[in-house]
Length: 166
Image (cartoon, rainbow, N blue to C red; front, side, top):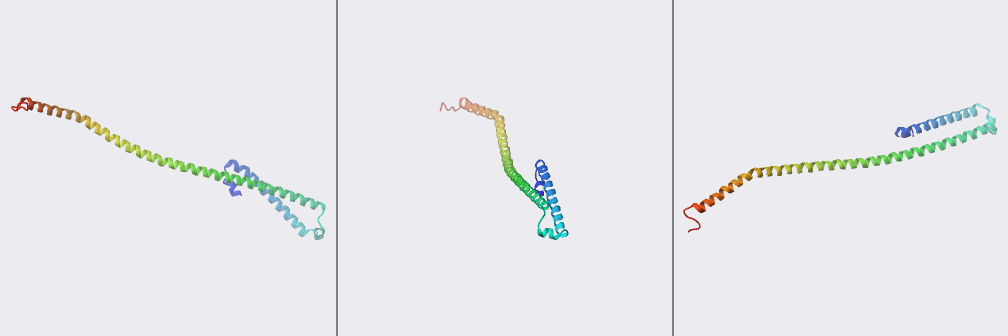
């Protein structure tokens, strides 16, 4: 449980670490009391333990039993808290995974957009080059047409054989 708490965010970790320290101290204290009782039984008056406990010992046993029950309840509560925190962590990890996938898809789509943009740019550059070439060639075509038309007219009107007079 201590390892699970270390993996939590600092805000949640501090509270749970304090609870765990308290639980460890409580368990340690109960162990010491149990060892002391065992020593008493082993080293103390054997007939008293066989015949029964005194009222004082019975009261201490009841107190210890109650404190053990309280500690057990606190441990169960801490365990529930840790399990809830673990579930929240798993949910967050799932959300982060989905976000990562969305970012990766967006990155792939942006790569495709970049490729399309590059291809469109090359197509536009080709179209501009052809338009520029056509613009430069237009006067040549016009002068060629003018000269051809002039030649045809000259042939028609100034030739010895006119197409009008056969």
